[in-house]
Length: 165
Image (cartoon, rainbow, N blue to C red; front, side, top):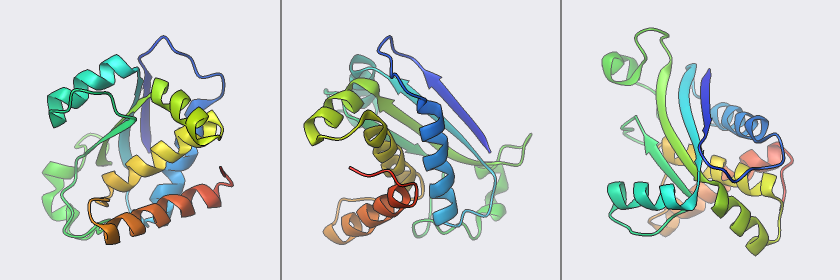
């Protein structure tokens, strides 16, 4: 697995954020039975940068906590069958790794939401990472039925890592 984590804000997290992100990514891949080694980019940024990205890609002029940019068009969520047929689109030709996508997280939102929900910064970062991983696997929460499935999957990842509220 190639996990690129870039920290692009002056606001500092005072714990091993890289370890938390890596654990959540690995557990998410295991739970969804991803049969490939993957390449994934995670960017930790601030609210202003997140606002600009959100405006550019979603036409929403406010910062959000996390954005996911999946590289795969799934028939059904986490269905990895048939991806090799489109090898040029989904795999890094140099490493053979599946190009899963990009996650962008606002460190300021991690801090705000941890305080708002009364849990640790580690838990909030882990939750946003798990949430975004589910989006990279093709899950969504626009419909109630989809939301229930996605929330259960996120919870299972965090529970298995013993990361609780």
